[in-house]
Amino acid sequence: MTGLSLSQRLFGIEFKNPVLGASGTFGYGEEFSEFYDVSLLGGFVTKAVTPEPRIGNPPPRVIETPSGMLNAIGLQNDGLDVFVEEILNRIAHFSTVIIVNVAGETAENYFTVCSELDRQNAVKAFEINISCPNVKKGGITFGSYPESAFSLIKGLHDVTDKPLIVKLSPNVTDIVEIALSVEDAGAHAVSLINTITGMVIDVEKRRPMLGNVTGGLSGPAIRPIAVRMVFEVAQAVSIPVIGIGGIFCARDALEFIIAGASLIEVGCGMFVKPRLPLEVIDGISEYMVRHGIESLSNLVGSIKVMEDERC
Image (cartoon, rainbow, N blue to C red; front, side, top):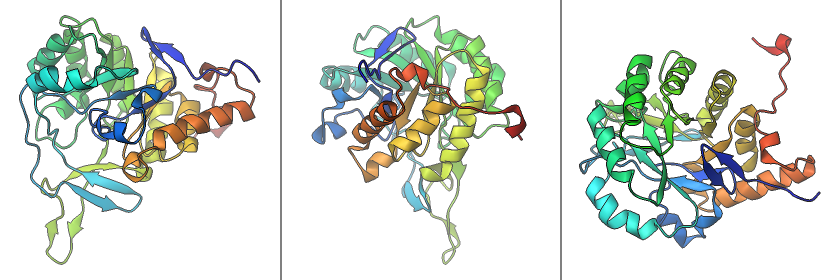
């Protein structure tokens, strides 16, 4: 077969392949550049950027769980000024799509970050984090209610022309409702899912094992939930969907793509295999060759579901 293409043009941006490094776990790209050329990826999403520096939650912050990981980092970052003056200058040379994850406690926080970064050519899009379960207030509030999510995304169009990808929380009654609200507000894409709120207890001490008490569960344990939510959202919206949650091999990524994800983000799997995104790219290519699929766009949302198979 000739002409195999993993590339896609979405919301005005050309992605060489559908594999992105996920926010938080991929840092600022520099950390993984020691293992491979990150320019081989379709892109990556930076750690969350907030207007002011955040020290994050008290330790312990990470606990291993069966088939997953519970984390409560708390959006630790050096703040907007350091990101612009130091970090962005160091990573701007990567020949791939750089998307900045934006977080905050108020709408004004989001407006401040996006307004400042709107003038930075290296930043191609924003992933608007309205779904972090590890902060006491802020993003998760916007992501829990359709009205507040709509208002935030609508307001961001006044401060930036860059594409807005809205990261959705699974910790809601109806994720489709939230997706539809941000689409109505002008979101260019949605990414899902963020982590699922969980808790681990030390039974001998009878105390929470995380300093924050609860944290966000990620890893293979949440993948079936994430795939289901991607499928449901992709059926409901007309904007691109980015799939996240427990991708540890190419087959996992293919589930999301077939369910309707145009792009996927690899997260905590990179803690086990730093080169995992490259393995996923190769695995998707091999699958397409084996099934005679020349263009990735023909694979996106190609799931076959009979009406009588629905529950």
